[in-house]
Length: 257
Length: 299
Image (cartoon, rainbow over the protein chains, first blue to last red):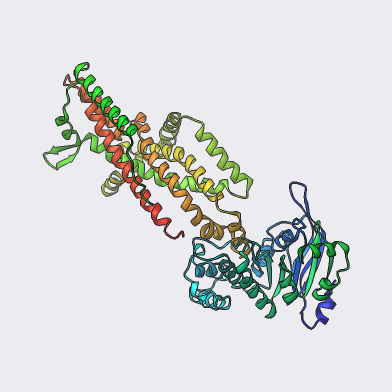
């Protein structure tokens, strides 16, 4: 398990940026979604979280930016603890970008409006500055021509690329991807994974919940396998996929690959 | 909105024929049994009358119509305000605000509007307005102020009546608008709230920029219906002598029956009906246009 030292000694990564310790989350219906789950992520690292459905992967991501409250444990992101302080919570959700399975673009705004909104309201940029950033990001995700389109006029893959640009516009320190390609038609999954792989190459810190093992192998630094809200096994990509230590992991990988 | 072709079937023809027959039978009964003499010629003079000094001025029925318009406008403005505030309170994170909104809706929706009117009239108009000396305040204003107030609301003599009528209607209709706003806000998908949250928007920014604009599209149609109801429901304040259309029609009915002339009851009430229809149908038309406009961006 990486800690301060291993983050610093790894040439690929910087300091510790996400620290989650002993996270426990029990839903109102009694389901224990997270059970004493801990994970440390270094700056610039791409961590791929896999596991059967209902294993708590999404809940973990949602806890990281405060969409769900944890019942026990501690979350520190870039030195700021996610506690009951309103200021800290707002700081964290501003610094953590999230990409959802269902895109969640704002349907009443154009692509440009979607990406400008938080830059203007949260970062206090002028319309012109925000638009400059937006156009650069749209160019990067290959959507510059669709700046004036409404979300309903775009395909799923295009919407998700816009959603990624929208999260990036806040210059987040960490990007969370919650099954970003699960709702997409097979033929457009590639264009979204391509954007994500580019981001990984540029050194963005990413925590990616996905079923795309190809992406994990290509772009991931480390794989975490979860089950019943707890960590079963984790390790660098190559050894993880080639020789998983845990029997449960072996079975899962056989089923999914 | 696409027009579907209307096809007339035999059953439709039979029904139309029956409707016409019922109308004719009604007119026949009026004429033969009640010996009702139609006298439409008497109506125009109750719409406008000729004043020696001021020329043509509105008479009872048009005065009533104008009062109904003023009453409805102010009630609609106030009811929209109350309903939006209470609707947002009902979707609040804070238990106190939710309970406040809920108590308001339950209280108002389970009391007959007529009872509300009397409560407001006797309590508010008679007690509080007197206590605050609103009457004296209005009367002591300059002539310009009172004439503007007369034009916008009501002349000084009936000002307190008018205000308590507006308040009652607004509080009554506001309860229904509360529910419309609440359901509209709650109908916006959870993902929208979460996306706004994860971008760092404050709760207020999220409501204003993300949730309300989407809720509006779903709120407009039922809201338009409720606002049209407000116009209709304003008739009820005739019981506290606010001289709106229904009150004036009742007055006129009474006066024309007393003087021994042939009663004008059907002419008066048909005219009043037409006037209400004029208001409500105009509003429906505007609402329809607004709906079309709001839906334009949807693919």
